[in-house]
Length: 136
Image (cartoon, rainbow, N blue to C red; front, side, top):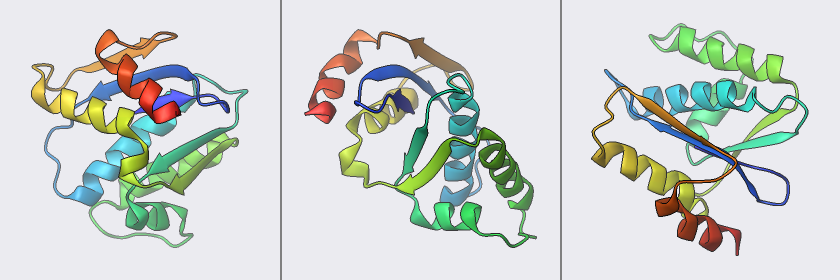
């Protein structure tokens, strides 16, 4: 995930890998929960979280109780979103966010299984060109 301000400037980014993921929806929900936790670092900024998983967004934004095996995770995301106040979750096409895609590919190819890595203020060198491309 990548965090940017309202001008598209880099604030921070984070990558990691999840263990024992049962489905694409499960993976997207885990990523959203991490994104919501990540945004807590900027409590005074209005933040828009984008995901290419429209079904996951609809599930989290619905008001009903989910009794599926992922119900507790969905509830976690709903509670974090409600507590955040100034955070919005919207649909965005994967092609628009090359930085998040590149971070995901790097995490999958790296040897940091289970570990999380965060960068603040300045991105890793290998990500700079993609940040510039996405901003243009």
